[in-house]
Amino acid sequence: MQAVRFGLVAAVIGVITAIDFRLHVNSTTVALTFLVAVLLVSAYWGLRYALVLALGATATFNFYFLPPIGTFTIADPQNWVALLAFLITALVASNLAERARRHAEAAKQRRREVELLYELSQRLLGSENELELLNALPLYIQETFSVRSVSVVAADHPSVYRSSPDAGADENLLRLTLLRGEPTTQAGVAYVPLRLGVRTVGALCVAGNELLPQTLDAIGSLAGLAIERVRALEALSKNQAMQENERLQSALLDSVTHEFRTPLTAIKSNVTTLLSGATLDDHGKRELLKVIDQETERLNRLVGEATEMGQLDAGMFELDLQLHSVQEALHPALEDAKASIKNHSMEILVPPDLPMIRMDALRIREVLMHLLDNAGKYSAPGTPIKVTAEVKSDWLVISVADRGIGIDSLEQTLIFDKFYRGGGRRYTASGAGLGLPIAKVIMGAHGGSISVVSQLGSGSVFSMSLPLKTIRVLPAKA
Image (cartoon, rainbow, N blue to C red):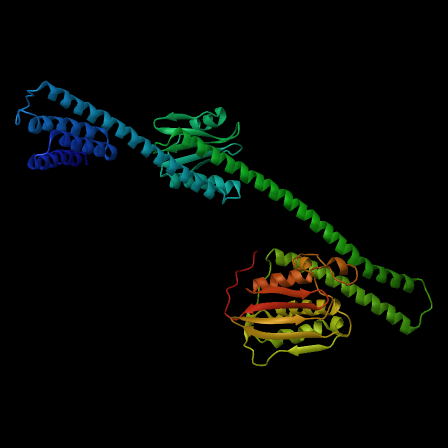
C-alpha cells in the first residue's frame, strides 16, 4: 500500500509538471499548484507522503521552471529565496494539514467510542440477574469493541468470567486490580477496576486492542454501574416477593377465616344441639344432619380449590386433550352450578353446528362451572344469565353474561388474582377467591385466554377463548 502511494506521489509530480510546462504558465502558478497537491496529500494520506511530495516538487520546480531551465543551478539569488520559501511553506502547510487530519481522526475515534459505549450500555440494561450479567458481560465488551478477549471478576463472586475459554488473563493480577482499585497494563493487556463512585465492585481484563485509557475507564464505570443495578433490582425483587408473600398469606388467612368460620359455626351449633339431648323429632334431626352435610361439603370444596390452585401453580397437572363439542362441557357445568343459578332464568345460545375442538372436557367444564357460579352469586335472583358460543376467526369464544351490579375498572384488573373477591362482596358471597384464578390457569394451559367486560350497574360478560387449531401442550412439571 505504501509503495502504491509513493508511486502516486511521483505520478502527481509528473502530471503537474507536464501540464504546467506544456501550458507555459508562470512560476507562481506552478508553485501554488504544487502547494495545493502537498496540502491534499497531507490531509488524506499523512505527513510522510506530503514530505516526499514537497521535496520532489521543490526539485522539479527548480529543474523545470527556474532559470537556467534543465539544471539544478539557480542563477538569480531571488530565485533562491523563492525556492526556499516554497519549500518552507510546503513543509509547514503539510505539517498543519497532518495535525488537522490527526485531530479529525481522533475526534472520529472518540465519537465512535462514545457510540460503542452507548451500545454497550443498552445491552447491559437488558440484564436483570447478576449471574446472567456476569456471564454475558465479557462477550458484550468483546463484540462491541472488537477486542481479542475479555475477562471479568466481581466482588463477592469467586469465579472469573471469560469471553472465551482461552481468554488470556492473569487471574492473580485481575484480582489484585480488584483489591487495589487501580488500572494497570502488562504485555499489552489492560486491567481496569470496575468502579461505582469510589467503591470497586469488580475488575476487567481487556486484551487485543489499543483502547484509550478514557474509554477503558468508561467501560469500567458502565460495567460497575450495571453490576450494582442488577444487585439493586434483585434486592428489590426479593423485597417485593416478600411483601407479595405476606400479602397473599394475609389474604389467605382472611379468606380462610371468613369462609371456614361460617360452616364450622353451623356444624358446631348443630352438633351441639344433637349432643345436648334436646327433644327433636326425626324431621328436625334430619334437617340438622342435612345442614352438617352441606357445610362439610362446602369445607371440602374450599380445601379442594386451595389444593388445586397449588397444583396448577406448580404445573403439576396434565391435560387430556380430545375432540369434544361445547355441549359436552357446558351441560355438566350447568348441573354443577345448579345451586347458584337455580333462581335465575337461563338463556343458552349455542349453535349445534359449532366445530369440535381439542380440549380437556373436565377442565373446561370446571371453568364454565366457575363462571356460572359467579354469575349466579353476584347477580340478583330472577335476573337472566345468558350463555353464548361462537367462532371468531381462529377461536371458539364462550361467554357467560349476567345482569349483576358490575365490576369497576380497577377490580377488573384484580379479579383474576388469587384470593381476591372484591371489596363490596367480600362478606356477602361465599367463596375463597380461587375460582377465576383456577380458570385463568386452565385456559392458559389450553393456549387460550379468559377476559371480562363489565360496566357498573349493567352486569358483566366473562369470555373464554379456545384456539380452533391444534395446540402443542408442554408436559407438566414433575
